Image (cartoon, rainbow, N blue to C red):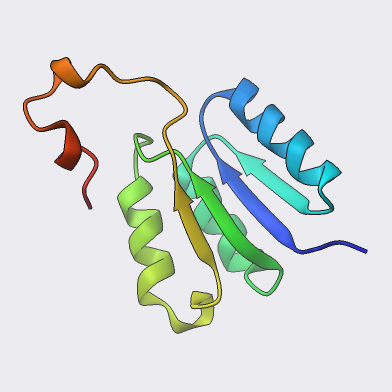
Length: 102
């Protein structure tokens, strides 16, 4: 029996594949896409099934996806995990703690 459905949004195919394999083995159904706008479409179509979204925040339109989930009551049950699939050098940014603040 499936534990629920998780949407993975990352433009790195390798990261998507690793997450999908791990989550499928743990009993979760998964959808994966590389573009935040595609993620929004999937959420609109499958919101009853999706329990969690894993999002790489540096993607174009990721803030729109976050806003879509947070502002729509139909999506209130969907949890959101924001993660970085790439290593950023803290010295490259003046304020690394707030760089990805939404």
